Amino acid sequence: MTALVIGGGFAGIAAAWALSRRGREVELVWRGAGASSSYPGALDRVEWGALPDARPLSADAEAFLSALGCFAAPGSMPARLATPAGVIRTARCRDRALFDLEPWRGRSIDVVDLGRPGWDAAALARAWSESGWARQTHTVFRAIPVAPPDADSVRWLPDLELAARADDPAWTESLARALAAAGNGESPLLIGPWLGLMPASFERLRAGLRRPIGETLSEPGGAAGHRFETARDALLERAAIPVRLGHVESVVRRSGRYEVLGRAEPEAPLASMAADVEVVLLALGGVAGGGIRFLAGPGPEGRSFSLSLQAPVVLRLGGREVSIQSGALGADLQQLGMDALLDVGISVDENMLARSPDLYAVGDVVADRPRCALEAIDSGLGAARAACRSRAPSMSP
Image (tube, rainbow, N blue to C red; front, side, top):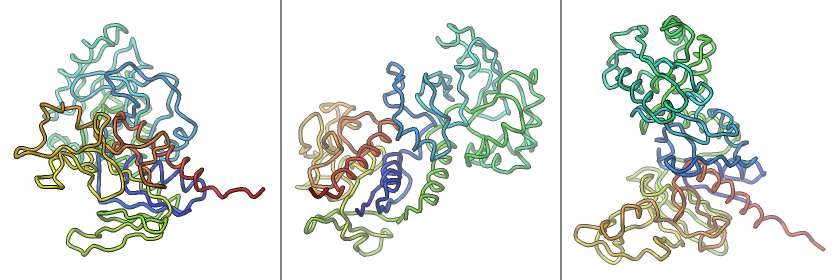
């Protein structure tokens, strides 16, 4: 079986990994970073404001996260994480550089203050201390000053550049010495998303520090997303899954197979990117990831929502096919509701199969499913299993 996965986020990588693991020939194509690269470091099945989701992960999902290598092993209970906005929230799984507060309930946790504008350690410590969880568990946060190496430069570096400093072993060693002496030298340390863009950097710092430490969640496009991209690229290389960079414009079915047309560069001529493909998996992302276009313009093809490529699929919103024409000012979200931006997507069956044979949709591009990382991973793994079952050679009697 030959398969092409379009999209390099959580859903697409999970599908490609699962297909390769089952011995199928698979190739990936994508055009750039999507919503997965902007995730904050938390993985969930449901929106984090809902009731905690304590369901165990499937064996496939655990194996996939382990293969990526940048996530902490999921426990029996959700992790509890701090956001850089002063909120404490739960998450079913997490980037292993993030600090899980739950094991330290009832303790004093030191908030690292590097003197950076935009990171008010004292105000964050007060906000976290006044949260419902902290009050219930008698957990206290307190700001402590830390003088990092090259303090004047560190004060003004953008978050990503500061995180990149932690990928330098010599700089990390100096930072570890400063952190070890901070406060009472024993309490766990909570720091901003600055502990490296490489998954191994945090482990190196923690080994040198010998004191519990971890990050808050990242802002969109922050360190956690970069660590996912690094782990993703390493996984694809280990699995020998070929990747092609380009913009796919259409998926066409001919004589029981698919041909994928696109452009390697925006100004390049339209050309065949893959031909004679048996299975195609669309992991394009939703509105936020660019897989679904919003306000496509007036005219016969100017729907309020449309797929970013041509394919024999059906877009649905609220249980019906999307056929709403954009007016002069575009789609009327006052009538549709803001949730339309999350709910619109490709209609699929329970196996993630779209309207056309051997054409699957996974992740945020699917209609009426939670826009959450674990949900995306589960859909990618499920589609890969279904594709392998449907293409398994029949047994002769």
